[in-house]
Structure formats: C-alpha cells, structure tokens
Image (cartoon, rainbow, N blue to C red; front, side, top):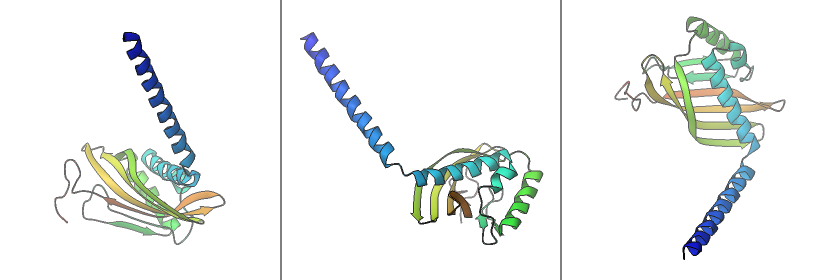
Length: 176
C-alpha cells in the first residue's frame, strides 16, 4: 500500500509539472515582441530618469516639436507640469537633473499594462509603483505613453503621468 501511494504521488507530481511546463511554453509563445520592446523603452526611460542620465533619457524620446509631457509632480500635490516640444523638454529635464542630482523616487515595478499597436504608432497605459525617498511614501503613478516606431525603434512622443496622491501610503492629499 505504501508503494502504491508513492506511485500515485509521483504520477500526480509528474503530471502537474508537465502541465506547468506546457503553460509556461504557451505563455512564452504568445508574448508579443513589439509589446516587450515598448515595455523595455518605458522601463529604460524611467531608469535613465532615476539615474539622472540626461543623454540616455533623451534617447527614449522622439526629437520633434510635437513631443510633449504632462505630469503631476510627486512633491507638489494639486499641480501640473507640462512641456511641449523635444528641445523644451530636454532643457527642462536638464535643469531639473542639475537642481536635483539624486532622484526623489525609486521605481518598485509596473503592472496593469494595456498596450495597443497600430502600425508604427502605439500607446501604453500602466501603473508604476514608486517610493518617494525623502518620506518613504509609497505612491502609484498612472502613466500613458504614446509611441512612434522610428527606424525600427520605439520612442516616446507623449508622456502623461498622474500621481495617485489620495491613495499614497501615507496619503498626501485627501480630496480632489
């Protein structure tokens, strides 16, 4: 009887392992390389920002007068910063990185991705989890990136970032 139970256990364990392996292969086969490339650009852009590497940061953006960003600064609930045009964005970021040589935040991962690709244009919406270094406040950023594929490379043409101050831990602002 003991031998029988061992055989059943090994059979069940082997079956479950095979099913999990098939599931992982199916997931790997359905991963969209274009979506993965878009995610890599977004992750790289954030990493360059946190490292205060202006040269790397600008390489993730389209060099165009139409390029823009809008955000709610994490240190100023209720305000909005906006820039239009690549050169204005670059100069603004250069000033910010000079004034603030150490990042005010860490990136603690991203989830809730929605990516739509149409030809050489795409948009990606996701939630970025951050920690504000000075106060150890955990806060989510809801981000939307509009992207263009130029010479085979995805680049950001519009970046909008909205901080969730109300649900930050601890909350930074209670009402809107």
